[in-house]
Length: 149
Image 1 (cartoon, helix red, strand yellow):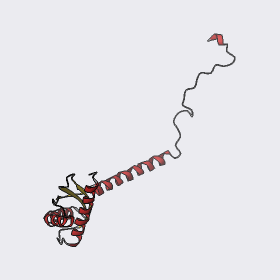
Image 2 (cartoon, rainbow, N blue to C red; image 1 turned 45 degrees about the vertical axis):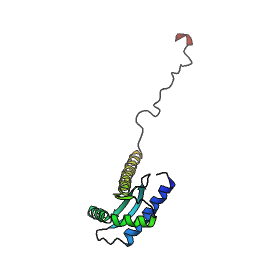
Image 3 (cartoon, rainbow, N blue to C red; image 1 turned 120 degrees about the vertical axis):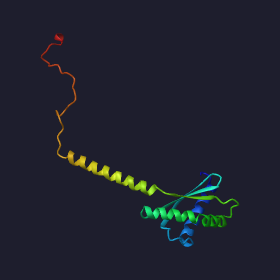
Image 4 (tube, one colour; image 1 turned 180 degrees about the horizontal axis):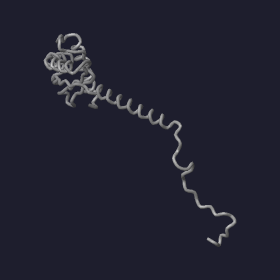
């Protein structure tokens, strides 16, 4: 979707759908929903609308059913406001980015805890072995003759 016109249409669809869900769609199954992104195909025939729902799995399922039933009303309003000859079909997709971000935050927190444990174990620790573990070249004492070697 590198075409600026397609990006503009996608942004406008996002605004229209979000306003419609907030003001005109009165389905009780519709939860606290946020439209996060709209991806439009290159020929502007198919729009995938990504959304998030605040709540548990039951609310997500109920919201998905409400969006499916309101798809026709939303598409007709998108067509009216865009004034396009061919209105794109709408498909709703639950956005998993917040869940992925939450998982990454948990993984980073575990890594910080492990780093803190390693730093605590390192405090007061002594290196194993000699203080200078590297091999040095052999030194020849000055009292030996160089011919004896």
